[in-house]
Image 1 (tube, rainbow, N blue to C red):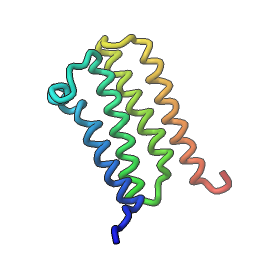
Image 2: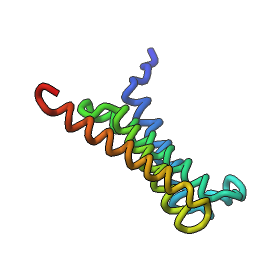
Image 3: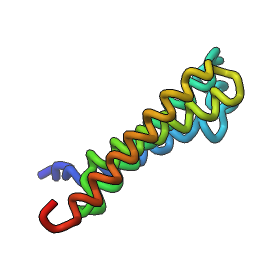
Image 4: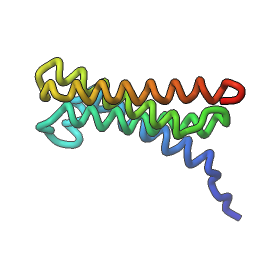
Length: 125
């Protein structure tokens, strides 16, 4: 009889793959392009890599922990990855400075989640 994989095994497997594949273009864009082909918008490849790595991290966390809601981790992590990308590439002149407004919006979303988490821990909240 063949054992079916558990959701934990699936989350561990996908999480590990997503973290590795998401971080690869961020850590070594040259080797990534040697394998996948040249990219015109490297900033976009790295931004997507960041988001993929965040999803992988949430999957790994959900596989090993039952304390933090994955939706909060996904929300905060993806907002942080997008906001960081906005700041890095707007300040380097790769993308328009208008993206700094998006970075501010992403920071506001993170602050909203942090405030909601504090309120949820207070009695009578």
